[in-house]
Length: 84
Image 1 (spheres, one colour):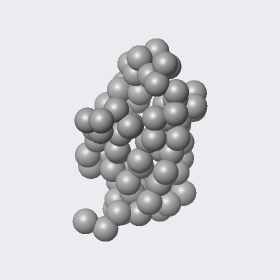
Image 2: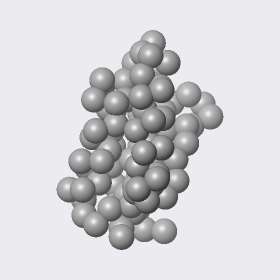
Image 3: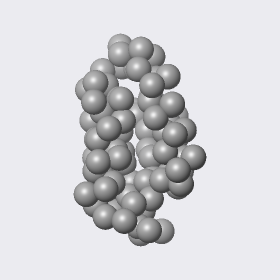
Image 4: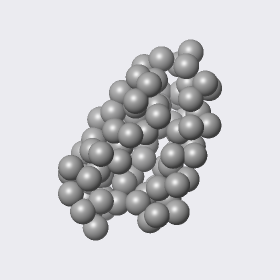
């Protein structure tokens, strides 16, 4: 599997808490499926990072794009293949 870094830039901080539980639940589900290598917020409040495990860029885009934060426009997604 390849690793993909999803940088989730904060766009609407006023909506962050409203969708946080859905975001956390979504990532926990993917983590249980073995689709997440690492995750966590930036300490400066600028957003967060999720490292997805996927077979292709298309799969990673699908996984990252279905995050409730992204779907609701709370965070802007920037996705890159990550070589660790």
